[in-house]
Image (cartoon, rainbow, N blue to C red; front, side, top):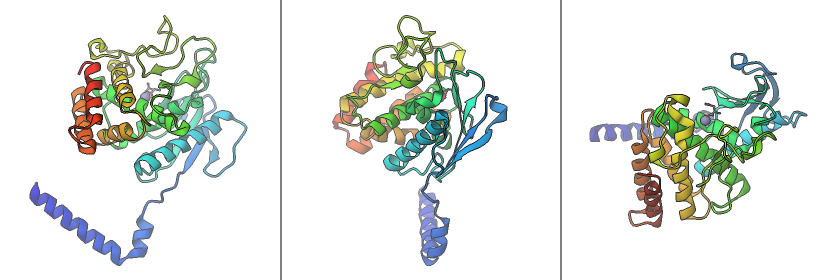
Length: 318
Ligand code: ASN
Ligand code: ZN
């Protein structure tokens, strides 16, 4: 290993020397740190017909369709968030184009990252309205793209719940960043703006101690556990990936509130670094220990941040 490291650093030095002796080449080789968005309309057709007709590209002015403009604006905010907070150039870190499609399916109550692009349903108009309407939902879907380029957490059971958790965390952090809301001021809700007139639920998910729904979890929200003892163990939803993520969402909420200030700064940085260190088969315990390792590295073993983190993990059963 040590020999490999020496060899690797010698190689890096050699590459750097070559780049320095060819400045033009290096300039051309550098990825352009600019956002590039494409928005398509799939006009009520299904996933197999993606992406559909191109209706707005980077630099084009707004169109009449609000779903197109929201997909454009919110994918732009998501790009800016990852660039400003983590110096990350798009989903792959190399400036990949952000591709979105709106009007997926008929009255579809969902939105997806399909491995290549985002696609948004219009909602049925009762439980949900169009899924582009919440910045945190757009941020959630795009974060699936970031995850797929980093740890690529397998979308099943514990690793799948962690995948959903990271998508929810960065989704809400992107909203908080856009609004400049502190952890104390933020709503900590996912999808508040997409809820339709036919439900009393306040959002899709709530990071806080409460539930996102009143009485009936079938009103368009995920009935998420907030403690490890309530972990869902059935096969529904790939082993409850949208349910068990709630345990981690709540821990992040407790941690960020205890640290104070903007959740997208110190807590967000620990989560981002952790996401990059995990692998496709990481389990709940790997998440906990990796955040502890990163918090210790960033803030020290006697820090208030590490203490707040340990308290948060304890509060949800770890
Ligand atoms: N909207 C859902 C999500 O991004 C779609 C799914 O079930 N994968 O998690
Ligand atoms: Zn998701």
